[in-house]
Amino acid sequence: MSVLNQKLEWRYATKKFDPTRSVPAEKIERIIEAIRLAPTSSGLQPFELFVVTNDEIRAKIR
Image (cartoon, rainbow, N blue to C red; front, side, top):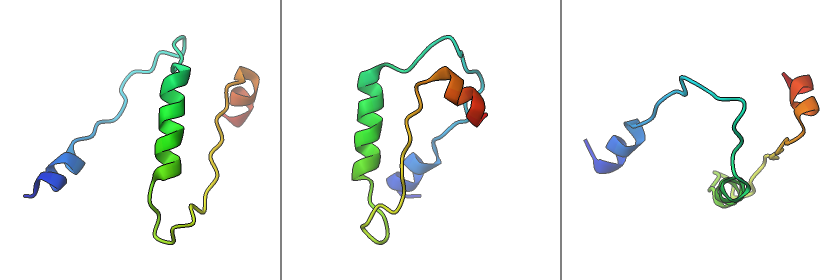
């Protein structure tokens, strides 16, 4: 098996989530930048990203 395939096989599901903790803003910015730079088959990034920080809106989405 190639090294790339080994790295792709390593993943896990989140088992516990602490709703009292939030993701630091600098990490969110890094995630957004990684999404922006992610390659797509068409090169056009045909998707939209919504970052929801308002708890009331999050509750409505749920």
